[in-house]
Image 1 (tube, rainbow, N blue to C red):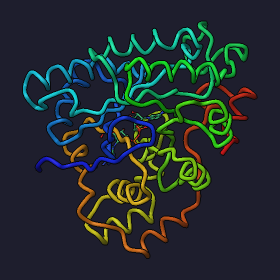
Image 2 (tube, rainbow, N blue to C red):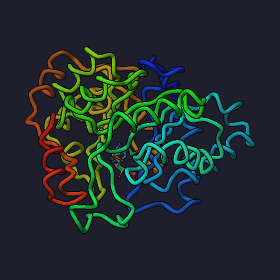
Image 3 (tube, protein in one colour):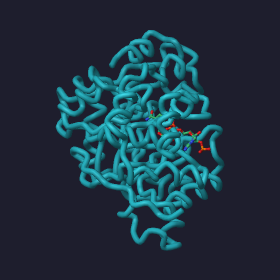
Length: 319
Ligand SMILES: NC(=O)c1ccc[n+]([C@@H]2O[C@H](COP(=O)([O-])OP(=O)(O)OC[C@H]3O[C@@H](n4cnc5c(N)ncnc54)[C@H](OP(=O)(O)O)[C@@H]3O)[C@@H](O)[C@H]2O)c1
Protein backbone atom coordinates (compact mmCIF):
# COMPACT_ATOMS: atom_id res chain seq x y z
CA UNK A 1 0.00 0.00 0.00
CA UNK A 2 1.27 3.48 -0.86
CA UNK A 3 1.29 6.86 0.80
CA UNK A 4 -2.06 8.63 1.21
CA UNK A 5 -2.33 12.39 0.71
CA UNK A 6 -4.50 13.49 3.61
CA UNK A 7 -6.50 16.68 2.85
CA UNK A 8 -5.96 19.77 5.05
CA UNK A 9 -8.59 22.25 6.28
CA UNK A 10 -8.64 25.68 7.91
CA UNK A 11 -9.68 25.66 11.54
CA UNK A 12 -10.95 28.98 12.91
CA UNK A 13 -8.37 31.00 14.81
CA UNK A 14 -5.49 28.55 14.16
CA UNK A 15 -2.61 30.04 12.15
CA UNK A 16 -2.19 26.98 9.95
CA UNK A 17 -4.23 24.31 8.22
CA UNK A 18 -4.86 20.94 9.84
CA UNK A 19 -4.76 17.51 8.16
CA UNK A 20 -8.28 16.06 8.48
CA UNK A 21 -7.06 12.75 9.87
CA UNK A 22 -4.61 12.68 12.75
CA UNK A 23 -2.91 9.72 14.38
CA UNK A 24 -3.93 9.27 18.01
CA UNK A 25 -1.28 8.25 20.52
CA UNK A 26 -3.35 7.15 23.50
CA UNK A 27 -2.67 3.43 23.64
CA UNK A 28 -4.18 0.72 25.82
CA UNK A 29 -2.17 -0.93 27.28
CA UNK A 30 0.28 2.00 27.19
CA UNK A 31 3.00 1.46 24.57
CA UNK A 32 6.67 1.58 25.57
CA UNK A 33 8.78 4.35 24.05
CA UNK A 34 10.32 2.24 21.27
CA UNK A 35 6.97 0.71 20.21
CA UNK A 36 5.25 4.09 20.08
CA UNK A 37 8.19 5.70 18.27
CA UNK A 38 8.29 2.92 15.65
CA UNK A 39 4.51 3.14 15.11
CA UNK A 40 4.68 6.93 14.68
CA UNK A 41 7.51 6.62 12.15
CA UNK A 42 5.47 3.99 10.31
CA UNK A 43 2.50 6.39 10.31
CA UNK A 44 4.62 9.21 8.86
CA UNK A 45 5.65 6.76 6.12
CA UNK A 46 1.96 6.01 5.46
CA UNK A 47 1.16 9.71 4.99
CA UNK A 48 0.01 10.84 8.46
CA UNK A 49 1.11 14.41 9.18
CA UNK A 50 -1.10 15.22 12.16
CA UNK A 51 -0.33 13.61 15.54
CA UNK A 52 -2.52 13.91 18.60
CA UNK A 53 -0.83 13.60 21.97
CA UNK A 54 -1.36 14.86 25.52
CA UNK A 55 0.72 15.24 28.66
CA UNK A 56 -1.62 12.69 30.24
CA UNK A 57 -0.96 9.98 27.63
CA UNK A 58 2.78 9.86 28.30
CA UNK A 59 3.24 9.85 24.52
CA UNK A 60 4.82 13.30 24.11
CA UNK A 61 8.35 11.93 24.54
CA UNK A 62 8.09 9.07 21.99
CA UNK A 63 6.39 11.45 19.57
CA UNK A 64 9.25 13.94 20.02
CA UNK A 65 11.79 11.18 19.42
CA UNK A 66 9.92 10.02 16.32
CA UNK A 67 9.74 13.55 14.90
CA UNK A 68 13.48 14.05 15.43
CA UNK A 69 14.17 10.68 13.77
CA UNK A 70 11.83 11.44 10.85
CA UNK A 71 13.73 14.67 10.23
CA UNK A 72 17.08 12.86 10.44
CA UNK A 73 15.86 10.20 8.00
CA UNK A 74 14.36 12.78 5.64
CA UNK A 75 10.84 11.30 5.92
CA UNK A 76 9.76 14.92 6.34
CA UNK A 77 11.88 17.84 5.18
CA UNK A 78 10.97 20.23 7.95
CA UNK A 79 9.00 20.29 11.18
CA UNK A 80 6.46 22.62 9.49
CA UNK A 81 5.15 19.68 7.48
CA UNK A 82 3.76 18.19 10.68
CA UNK A 83 0.74 19.29 12.70
CA UNK A 84 1.12 18.48 16.39
CA UNK A 85 -1.71 18.68 18.90
CA UNK A 86 -1.12 18.34 22.62
CA UNK A 87 -3.25 19.03 25.68
CA UNK A 88 -3.14 20.81 29.03
CA UNK A 89 -3.63 18.25 31.79
CA UNK A 90 -6.27 19.02 34.45
CA UNK A 91 -3.71 19.08 37.30
CA UNK A 92 -2.15 22.16 35.64
CA UNK A 93 -5.44 23.89 34.77
CA UNK A 94 -4.69 26.93 36.88
CA UNK A 95 -3.68 30.31 35.44
CA UNK A 96 -0.05 30.43 36.63
CA UNK A 97 0.69 26.81 35.81
CA UNK A 98 -0.37 26.89 32.18
CA UNK A 99 2.57 28.54 30.40
CA UNK A 100 5.04 26.33 32.38
CA UNK A 101 2.93 23.22 31.54
CA UNK A 102 2.96 24.16 27.87
CA UNK A 103 6.77 24.60 28.00
CA UNK A 104 7.12 21.21 29.69
CA UNK A 105 5.13 19.61 26.84
CA UNK A 106 7.33 21.38 24.29
CA UNK A 107 10.41 20.06 26.05
CA UNK A 108 8.98 16.50 26.00
CA UNK A 109 8.26 16.93 22.29
CA UNK A 110 11.68 18.54 21.54
CA UNK A 111 9.74 21.29 19.72
CA UNK A 112 9.68 25.08 19.81
CA UNK A 113 5.94 25.23 19.17
CA UNK A 114 2.95 22.97 18.70
CA UNK A 115 0.16 23.55 16.21
CA UNK A 116 -2.74 23.09 18.60
CA UNK A 117 -2.92 23.26 22.39
CA UNK A 118 -6.19 22.07 23.94
CA UNK A 119 -7.65 22.18 27.44
CA UNK A 120 -7.94 18.41 27.88
CA UNK A 121 -10.91 18.22 30.29
CA UNK A 122 -13.42 20.78 31.53
CA UNK A 123 -12.38 20.22 35.18
CA UNK A 124 -9.41 20.97 37.38
CA UNK A 125 -7.86 18.21 39.47
CA UNK A 126 -5.94 18.89 42.66
CA UNK A 127 -2.29 17.87 43.01
CA UNK A 128 -3.27 14.98 45.28
CA UNK A 129 -4.78 13.09 42.34
CA UNK A 130 -2.44 10.24 41.44
CA UNK A 131 -4.85 7.75 39.89
CA UNK A 132 -8.30 7.24 38.39
CA UNK A 133 -10.97 6.96 39.65
CA UNK A 134 -10.24 9.91 41.95
CA UNK A 135 -10.35 8.95 45.63
CA UNK A 136 -12.08 12.02 47.09
CA UNK A 137 -14.72 14.42 45.77
CA UNK A 138 -12.77 17.43 47.03
CA UNK A 139 -9.93 16.62 44.63
CA UNK A 140 -12.19 17.58 41.69
CA UNK A 141 -12.51 21.31 41.21
CA UNK A 142 -14.35 23.47 38.72
CA UNK A 143 -12.29 25.27 36.08
CA UNK A 144 -11.88 29.00 36.40
CA UNK A 145 -12.51 29.26 32.71
CA UNK A 146 -11.83 32.99 32.33
CA UNK A 147 -8.32 32.94 33.85
CA UNK A 148 -7.42 29.54 32.35
CA UNK A 149 -8.36 30.74 28.89
CA UNK A 150 -6.35 33.96 29.37
CA UNK A 151 -3.28 31.78 29.99
CA UNK A 152 -4.10 29.67 26.92
CA UNK A 153 -4.27 32.92 24.91
CA UNK A 154 -0.90 33.87 26.36
CA UNK A 155 0.55 30.57 25.06
CA UNK A 156 -0.60 31.53 21.58
CA UNK A 157 0.58 35.13 21.88
CA UNK A 158 4.01 33.89 23.01
CA UNK A 159 4.24 31.75 19.86
CA UNK A 160 4.30 28.48 21.82
CA UNK A 161 1.31 27.23 19.81
CA UNK A 162 -0.28 28.16 16.48
CA UNK A 163 -3.77 27.49 17.75
CA UNK A 164 -5.69 27.01 20.99
CA UNK A 165 -8.82 25.05 21.67
CA UNK A 166 -10.68 22.80 24.05
CA UNK A 167 -11.68 19.19 24.42
CA UNK A 168 -14.79 17.57 25.89
CA UNK A 169 -16.58 20.93 26.10
CA UNK A 170 -20.38 21.07 26.01
CA UNK A 171 -22.42 23.93 24.44
CA UNK A 172 -22.84 25.30 27.98
CA UNK A 173 -19.08 25.35 28.68
CA UNK A 174 -18.36 26.89 25.27
CA UNK A 175 -20.95 29.60 25.89
CA UNK A 176 -19.22 30.44 29.17
CA UNK A 177 -15.82 30.48 27.45
CA UNK A 178 -16.94 32.64 24.52
CA UNK A 179 -18.36 35.25 26.89
CA UNK A 180 -14.82 36.39 27.84
CA UNK A 181 -12.46 34.90 25.21
CA UNK A 182 -10.37 37.34 23.18
CA UNK A 183 -9.22 34.52 20.89
CA UNK A 184 -12.08 32.07 20.25
CA UNK A 185 -11.23 28.36 20.53
CA UNK A 186 -10.31 26.97 17.11
CA UNK A 187 -11.21 23.38 17.95
CA UNK A 188 -13.39 21.34 20.28
CA UNK A 189 -12.10 17.75 20.30
CA UNK A 190 -14.90 15.43 21.42
CA UNK A 191 -16.06 11.85 21.18
CA UNK A 192 -17.85 11.44 17.87
CA UNK A 193 -18.74 8.43 15.74
CA UNK A 194 -21.92 6.97 14.19
CA UNK A 195 -23.08 5.81 17.66
CA UNK A 196 -22.53 9.26 19.24
CA UNK A 197 -23.14 11.78 16.49
CA UNK A 198 -23.12 15.00 18.55
CA UNK A 199 -25.81 16.68 16.41
CA UNK A 200 -26.61 19.50 18.85
CA UNK A 201 -22.98 20.29 19.70
CA UNK A 202 -22.10 20.31 16.00
CA UNK A 203 -24.87 22.77 15.22
CA UNK A 204 -23.70 25.04 18.02
CA UNK A 205 -20.04 24.83 16.99
CA UNK A 206 -20.87 25.45 13.32
CA UNK A 207 -22.76 28.60 14.30
CA UNK A 208 -19.81 29.83 16.38
CA UNK A 209 -17.04 28.90 13.91
CA UNK A 210 -15.52 26.26 16.20
CA UNK A 211 -14.18 23.22 14.40
CA UNK A 212 -15.09 19.76 15.75
CA UNK A 213 -12.43 17.10 15.86
CA UNK A 214 -13.74 13.58 16.44
CA UNK A 215 -11.93 11.28 18.85
CA UNK A 216 -12.73 7.59 19.41
CA UNK A 217 -14.10 7.49 15.82
CA UNK A 218 -13.93 3.69 15.97
CA UNK A 219 -15.50 3.56 19.43
CA UNK A 220 -11.99 3.02 20.91
CA UNK A 221 -12.19 -0.61 19.83
CA UNK A 222 -10.31 -3.01 22.17
CA UNK A 223 -9.42 -0.39 24.79
CA UNK A 224 -10.55 -0.13 28.40
CA UNK A 225 -12.42 3.14 27.61
CA UNK A 226 -14.14 1.70 24.52
CA UNK A 227 -15.73 -1.37 22.94
CA UNK A 228 -16.84 -2.75 19.57
CA UNK A 229 -20.07 -0.72 19.35
CA UNK A 230 -18.80 1.00 16.17
CA UNK A 231 -16.66 -1.71 14.57
CA UNK A 232 -19.32 -4.36 15.32
CA UNK A 233 -22.36 -2.21 14.40
CA UNK A 234 -24.60 -4.24 12.05
CA UNK A 235 -25.55 -1.32 9.82
CA UNK A 236 -21.90 -0.30 9.34
CA UNK A 237 -20.95 -3.91 8.69
CA UNK A 238 -23.68 -4.28 6.06
CA UNK A 239 -22.65 -1.09 4.29
CA UNK A 240 -18.99 -2.10 4.48
CA UNK A 241 -19.69 -5.53 3.01
CA UNK A 242 -21.69 -4.16 0.10
CA UNK A 243 -18.98 -1.59 -0.71
CA UNK A 244 -15.89 -3.78 -0.26
CA UNK A 245 -14.77 -1.67 2.75
CA UNK A 246 -14.38 -2.29 6.47
CA UNK A 247 -16.77 -0.96 9.11
CA UNK A 248 -13.86 1.20 10.37
CA UNK A 249 -13.60 2.82 6.94
CA UNK A 250 -17.36 3.38 6.77
CA UNK A 251 -17.30 5.14 10.15
CA UNK A 252 -14.30 7.28 9.19
CA UNK A 253 -15.76 8.15 5.79
CA UNK A 254 -19.08 9.12 7.43
CA UNK A 255 -17.22 11.43 9.84
CA UNK A 256 -15.23 13.00 6.99
CA UNK A 257 -18.47 13.66 5.11
CA UNK A 258 -19.87 15.45 8.19
CA UNK A 259 -17.10 18.07 7.79
CA UNK A 260 -15.29 17.23 11.01
CA UNK A 261 -11.66 16.20 11.39
CA UNK A 262 -10.71 12.89 12.95
CA UNK A 263 -8.10 11.56 15.35
CA UNK A 264 -7.86 7.80 15.29
CA UNK A 265 -5.21 5.54 16.74
CA UNK A 266 -3.67 2.43 15.24
CA UNK A 267 -0.16 1.21 15.88
CA UNK A 268 -0.76 -1.66 13.44
CA UNK A 269 0.87 -1.20 10.04
CA UNK A 270 -2.07 -2.47 8.00
CA UNK A 271 -4.87 -0.85 10.02
CA UNK A 272 -3.20 2.58 10.08
CA UNK A 273 -3.17 2.49 6.25
CA UNK A 274 -6.74 1.17 6.09
CA UNK A 275 -7.87 4.13 8.21
CA UNK A 276 -6.64 6.79 5.76
CA UNK A 277 -7.82 4.93 2.68
CA UNK A 278 -11.18 6.73 2.64
CA UNK A 279 -10.76 9.61 0.21
CA UNK A 280 -11.57 8.05 -3.18
CA UNK A 281 -15.15 6.91 -2.59
CA UNK A 282 -18.28 8.26 -0.91
CA UNK A 283 -21.37 7.05 0.88
CA UNK A 284 -24.67 7.10 -0.96
CA UNK A 285 -27.53 9.22 0.34
CA UNK A 286 -29.31 6.05 1.41
CA UNK A 287 -26.26 4.81 3.35
CA UNK A 288 -25.83 8.18 5.08
CA UNK A 289 -29.51 8.15 6.02
CA UNK A 290 -29.20 4.70 7.60
CA UNK A 291 -26.21 5.87 9.65
CA UNK A 292 -28.02 9.06 10.71
CA UNK A 293 -30.82 6.92 12.16
CA UNK A 294 -28.63 4.72 14.37
CA UNK A 295 -29.59 4.65 18.07
CA UNK A 296 -27.33 6.98 20.05
CA UNK A 297 -25.19 6.23 23.11
CA UNK A 298 -22.43 8.27 24.68
CA UNK A 299 -19.35 6.11 25.24
CA UNK A 300 -16.97 8.30 27.24
CA UNK A 301 -18.37 9.21 30.67
CA UNK A 302 -16.54 11.15 33.37
CA UNK A 303 -18.48 9.24 36.00
CA UNK A 304 -16.76 6.07 34.76
CA UNK A 305 -13.28 7.62 34.48
CA UNK A 306 -13.06 10.04 37.43
CA UNK A 307 -15.81 8.56 39.60
CA UNK A 308 -19.58 8.94 40.03
CA UNK A 309 -19.33 12.35 41.74
CA UNK A 310 -21.95 15.11 41.29
CA UNK A 311 -19.63 17.30 39.18
CA UNK A 312 -18.87 14.38 36.80
CA UNK A 313 -22.55 13.43 36.47
CA UNK A 314 -23.34 17.08 35.68
CA UNK A 315 -20.71 17.23 32.93
CA UNK A 316 -21.88 13.89 31.51
CA UNK A 317 -25.46 15.20 31.30
CA UNK A 318 -24.47 18.39 29.43
CA UNK A 319 -24.78 18.37 25.64
N1 LIG B 1 -9.52 14.52 24.10
C1 LIG B 1 -9.82 13.42 24.72
O1 LIG B 1 -10.31 13.43 25.86
C2 LIG B 1 -9.57 12.11 24.04
C3 LIG B 1 -10.19 10.95 24.50
C4 LIG B 1 -9.94 9.74 23.81
C5 LIG B 1 -9.08 9.74 22.72
N2 LIG B 1 -8.46 10.89 22.32
C6 LIG B 1 -7.50 10.91 21.17
O2 LIG B 1 -8.12 10.33 20.05
C7 LIG B 1 -7.35 9.22 19.60
C8 LIG B 1 -8.27 8.18 18.97
O3 LIG B 1 -9.27 7.75 19.87
P1 LIG B 1 -9.23 6.34 20.61
O4 LIG B 1 -7.82 5.85 20.68
O5 LIG B 1 -10.00 6.50 21.86
O6 LIG B 1 -10.09 5.39 19.71
P2 LIG B 1 -10.23 4.89 18.19
O7 LIG B 1 -9.31 5.60 17.28
O8 LIG B 1 -11.69 4.95 17.94
O9 LIG B 1 -9.84 3.36 18.32
C9 LIG B 1 -8.54 2.92 18.56
C10 LIG B 1 -8.59 1.43 18.81
O10 LIG B 1 -9.14 0.76 17.67
C11 LIG B 1 -8.20 -0.15 17.11
N3 LIG B 1 -8.26 0.03 15.63
C12 LIG B 1 -7.67 1.00 14.90
N4 LIG B 1 -7.97 0.88 13.61
C13 LIG B 1 -8.79 -0.20 13.51
C14 LIG B 1 -9.44 -0.82 12.40
N5 LIG B 1 -9.29 -0.37 11.17
N6 LIG B 1 -10.19 -1.93 12.67
C15 LIG B 1 -10.34 -2.39 13.94
N7 LIG B 1 -9.74 -1.84 15.01
C16 LIG B 1 -8.99 -0.74 14.80
C17 LIG B 1 -6.86 0.25 17.68
O11 LIG B 1 -6.03 -0.89 17.81
P3 LIG B 1 -4.64 -1.07 16.98
O12 LIG B 1 -3.72 0.02 17.43
O13 LIG B 1 -4.20 -2.42 17.41
O14 LIG B 1 -5.00 -0.99 15.54
C18 LIG B 1 -7.24 0.81 19.04
O15 LIG B 1 -7.38 -0.22 20.00
C19 LIG B 1 -6.61 8.77 20.86
O16 LIG B 1 -5.51 7.92 20.58
C20 LIG B 1 -6.23 10.10 21.44
O17 LIG B 1 -5.12 10.64 20.76
C21 LIG B 1 -8.71 12.07 22.94
